[in-house]
Length: 371
Image (cartoon, rainbow, N blue to C red):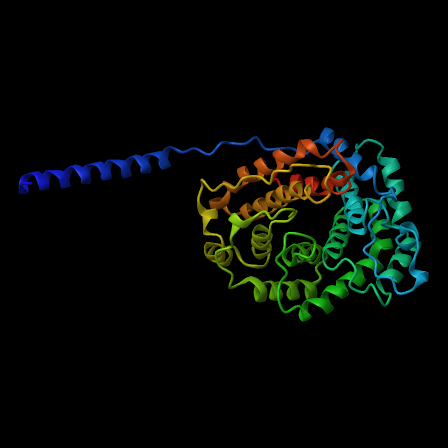
């Protein structure tokens, strides 16, 4: 081969590679993310979703007690053990079923059968029933009962009542206050002893438990709880980098470990500090083409597999919280819409395995959409 032919061959290879790279760049530049219609929580949707907690807050069986039994005297029915929160299959689902109704009534005073719903709430969350719930939590064998998932939802219920301008809300908030105070104290006692965060995609997830408790503390201006959560969140998560979002979801997650953590840190850091932190933790969120597939549910009659509807709602409310007040992250709202729209149509009229709890997740995700 002559020098001329060799130089010509190099030129052809260079031209081919350069053109290929330009085509790749052009493809990237012309890629458009599908714009997803934003779901809305209107009165019709509220009436639809309200049926889920209405149908379960007084439905005692089936029931999963998660009880530690100290003696034969502890063997009682769910309603005897938990006269306020005995329905919806388990204690925490009963709590956030009540939260769902409070949230919907607060937003939609014209909700169907609202007088009957108010009466159900007053009947369940009575002073006498809450006093008996306290006895259970103060018992020798159940001091860590529902830590911290159920604790978090109880404080979310307390927050919703506190911010609802209603005579019914004032009575309910007063009745619930002893339980609220007990669980605040449990947070104050437990968090200093927790050496490592729990990063799973189910109930014990520390980031989720701290986020809801922090929202309550902000709403009622509980400075001690706010400060403790701020400090513990930074202890646990401030040095985290490169969260493996591609590993999510696990087979039956209903929370997103990466995004729940990011939403918590958005709460406790300034906007500038958060932007710096998120660049190390999940830099891909800065990409306007960022996308993750929804969690796909193969069998909604399976109580574990249906959890993946929950992870879709968890991702949505976390993405919306991250985008709040940060223009550079507004593109995440479209991804949140996609996740809500996948799971929302399936949860009403479906099996009890999902119906007893998913309504609350759907409502909270819809509430996270900025009006």
